[in-house]
Image (cartoon, rainbow, N blue to C red; front, side, top):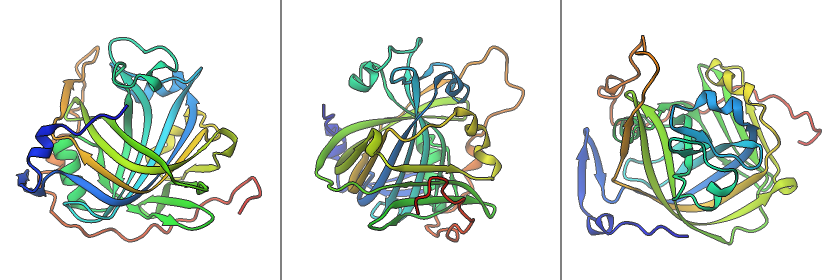
Length: 296
């Protein structure tokens, strides 16, 4: 089912906004931007440790799902940048949703993905994405490569490998994708929800045909995710050119705990002094561990 772009967004097309010092030509949209996605089964009980109260793992049969999405944003109101999303498929509500059904009835079960980590190439993307939409963005050393053999992206910090993902290209990219996707994130002690409307064509590989590789490197940032028992990919998607429009409507809820947290969560102090620079950090250069399956 296609969720149409709200009329309020269509009405201000061609106008401008200045939010937290970030200039936007409206709507806030990206075009001509290739993307890859790889979906891996993970242990559902262990996935709960990464999710705040009210967010539950979306389960297919007994497994939860790890979603790695990398978008090479080439045309946006804030310039070019790569965005590397590492997330857990989820539902939002008082109780966990039934198995499988949220994948079919996403709006009813408030399904989406909870973003665990979200490095981007440019500082202006951090300033806007975190300050306005509450996304856990930070600047990282990123790339996005497309060849006949693979589509891949590497993510480094401090000279070390954080993560590497690659997928085998599909034979065709003719499947239409017109949908709304929900991102849940934690920022300022609140659960933040934002939506993006996607319009693209894609190619998909499923189950045994889904040839993908996801490597967590030796940088400490994602070491805890190794406990998720990440399995072989069950789906890969390549979108050669997406059009994505961010909704201007953001929802938020207080995060609540059994006891008052001893340490204040990251807040607006982390973004107010950031610049509007569109410059990238140097390309990632950390070595990638060799494959163990004999493939090149």
